[in-house]
Amino acid sequence: MKLHLKHTTDYRYSEPLLYALQTLWLTPLSGPAQTVDFWSLGAPEKLFPQHDAYGNRIHSYTFVGKVSDDVCWSLVNAAGQVDTLGVAEFVDAPSLPHPSFFLRPTPLAAPHAVLAEFGLRFVASAASNGNGNGKADLASLLALSQGIADLVRYQKNSTNVSTTALEAFQAGAGVCQDQAHVMVAVCRSLGIPARYVSGYFYAANEPDLASHAWADVCLDVAERRWVSIDITHSCLIDQRHVRLAMGTDYNACPPIKGVRQGGGEESMTVSITIEPV
Image 1: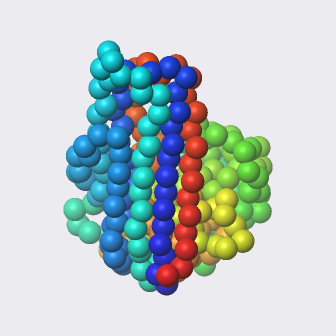
Image 2: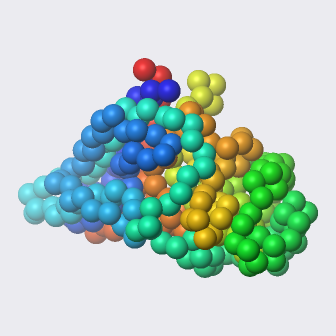
């Protein structure tokens, strides 16, 4: 499926902006699940590209205001066309971190005994998966995904970007980001490497899910083989999914992250459109 995407982030400030440094995780890469036909990125200042430790293509820019400036807004645009292939299982490139790296606890997806107890309802034994032969069973992982979707119900505006996996689990509600964090944290609690994925999801009747998140779970540590699971829809990723970036949790690959000086109060409006070609 060929999808045309446009992602606009509009920042507004109550006072002139004096300084800003921002990093953008807004450039998808071609890989086993997709081919990027073309992509463009626009920002208020010159963009400097590089790759992060997870192989994501990132861009940074710096804005420095002048005394005579009265800049109270900032606009970031990303747009392009991606041919989605619907491939859910893949092998990592040797240059990427070893799967065991993704067992480490992170603030938003930390292992916990409560999460391990829940996970063992679906994954028979932690020792026979992540801590034993380094392999995980796909059917069990899909059952776990369904169990998380049933427990952590999708509820818009029920959490924020700082909500942890345990908090969403205990609250029983969240958005796709929270469901992905719970999946990652449960897998880590069972000794199965897992990581967070940001991306886009095309569905004509679900515009709120255009900005989406899911999880990569390691099926075979020795072979560095992974599978991408959409917890919100309890399925493997398919041609509706566009992969944007991945990391240990949301904090490692947000769409935009930065610091600023001045500007007063900030408001942000995000607009994402996805259309089949």
